[in-house]
Length: 257
Image (tube, rainbow, N blue to C red; front, top):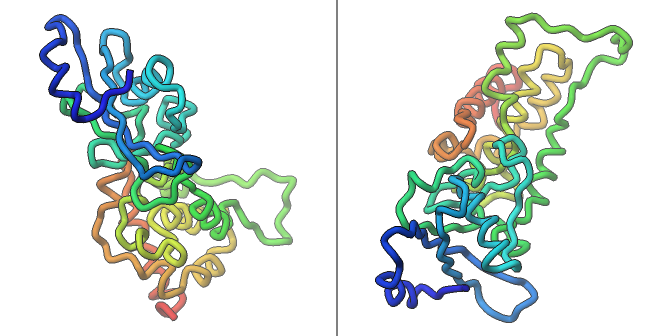
């Protein structure tokens, strides 16, 4: 059963006290239908559902509305697939406990992203930008590729707080600079990934990576609002990585062009 928002007050008094009911308001949009975006409101009996927001969405899709579209995969906060805006905060649905949220939840797709359908954003531009930073180790041609490329424990510690990024795009979707300049500004998630490869002691392409980032918009569109750090579901600090990139650009390359 799908409920409209106006129907909510009419049925609330009919619910039994021993029933734990949570109302979920979900953003809906279908490109194949000639109608504007709208909300569908679903009542979910919490006794029949898990404790995470992703459990609510799976329950809704299985028992209320099979047309609801959203991404999910690992359910462990590793793949980053189920990123969405939950009651005004970008997060991973599989890591968000709805018991800590108000009794009425509103779920949107990631803000300021093109949509494919319902809660599924189009991340084509996001992954294109990811490919631009060449997210792999680049070694010198004369390096012996047969021998294992070892790294000291000290050098490995430098990567802590960088390699854990799951590319969920929660931070980039919370950044006003990325909202308005997504075609030019790489965004906090991609820049954190770029800094991860710049910081890797096994990589020999640091200068070229920095030269690529040495641009007015690719890095310097960041105004250090820190929305990205607040939004990160993995508790990383993209803003710090961006500031480190700016420092290295200043001293190694000579500042923005």
